[in-house]
Image (cartoon, rainbow, N blue to C red; front, side, top):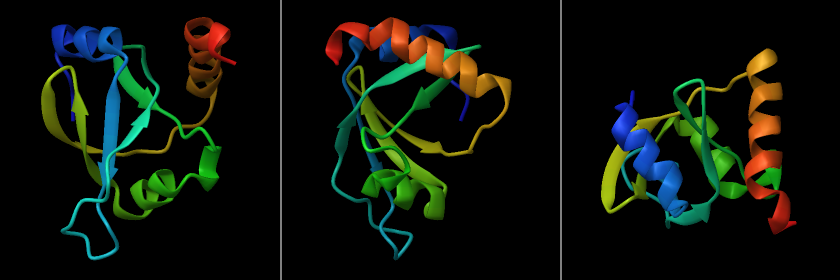
Length: 102
């Protein structure tokens, strides 16, 4: 899913994103989990607090879809793993945005 610049700005500024990937049945959403989010290069990114061991992350990788609740809106989204240079930019953005939260 692509977000408009306005929607992306609202989601990131609200800093209150809940994510609910599908359960294994592929039709029922899991329990929404609060996570940090940010935007890099015009795209929304999320990461699990426990990295790839986070349950919601594992479900998202398997199902490639979820719903998010953010900035007063519920949206269906898809997931794509990223690698390469964008990961470095995401790392830098997380450090900058959440440095005081550690």
